[in-house]
Image (cartoon, rainbow, N blue to C red; front, top):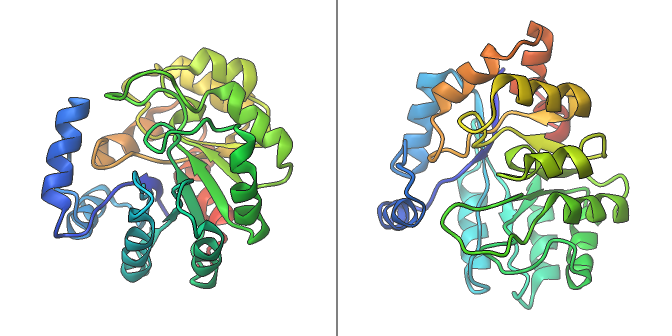
Amino acid sequence: MIIDVHTHCFDNVIAKKAISVLSKKSGIPAHTDGTVSDLIRSMDESHIDISVIQPIATKPKQTEVINRWGTSINNERIISFGTIHPEYPNWKSEIRYLASCKVKGIKFHPDYQEFFVDDPKLFPIYEEVFSHNMIALFHAGIDIGLPEPCHCTPKGLRNIVRTFKGARIIAAHMGGCGLWNEVEKYLVGEDIYFDTSYTSHALDLDFMTRIIKNHGVDQILFGTDSPWGNQDSEVEFIRSLPLNDEDKDKILGKNAIKVLGLQL
């Protein structure tokens, strides 16, 4: 089974505009049209069984609308995380709503949402998320198309991991897009999961393999960042790594089954 833990989709009404704006801002072409149906087409072509959508409320008022949409699209092949904007005033009740809907986790994007990952002001929100046994997935490292500073560094994430011991935390982009030397310094060996999204073009096989082996293959999750990553080529990248088949199967799906608590 192959599970992509890091994808993006939008409501059909706004998908075309959202893809156009984001592609222009980042300079990255999209591999789907941003709709759930086109994601499923990509999944079928890539032999991916389940994709996890990681929504982002870039404004507080978007929080409820995006979460209602996310809970409405869940099915046997699509799992949507929730989103909480830190400035959304009813964040506690919204987290409880998402937990009641059995949403698996919350996606945070410190750059788009303009907060530093280890700012203590965010700790009550994290505490509420973890109190419901939900996962926190963070965009980690540099976001292409957004100005400095980087709001989620490997060092900042280490502070979160050590503050919230035992929590399920996923750092996207192998712990920190563009900051992989800092990932090795601050995060490798810590109690945190890395997803592989948007790294195949930036990390050579030797460096990627070293991080995986030193961090532990059980802590690595397959992600593509679709539509910004091509799901088919990302699967092939994982299969090309100099690892045994069992380790590749763990990265491509077995680890995600455990982390997400899926009953298959």
